[in-house]
Image (tube, rainbow, N blue to C red):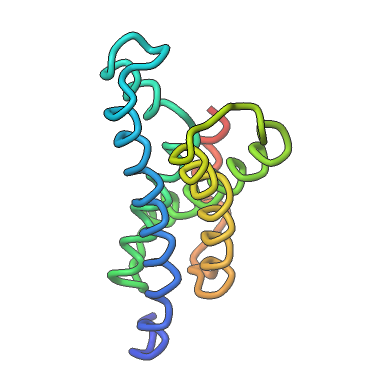
Length: 155
């Protein structure tokens, strides 16, 4: 079912905002790593490897990619896309909840780290949930999609 032209345009905006928030937050992390050096990691390569192994970063990347795809084409569909989109949403909500329930204030961060932290753990999760509530795609979720989508966070 194709969306009307006006509703498709309106759906693009929240997804584009989320994708841009993710891009900004993710870009800050390697930039900081290259500016500050390896830190406790030993090498810059190890620092970047550690960075991209974090659930927070992986969640943001998955959500950012699916949000960007929806910003380009809000009626995007297909089983794999449905699973990836729901997975990104579930993971980013878990990221926000766990961070605010357990991890807030644990690390001593630079100003760039504080900004990145705010984007990765607060702005993106809230923005993603709002975009999903406002524009979906919600009716595309069925039992099989939901089961596949919880596989990654459970692992």
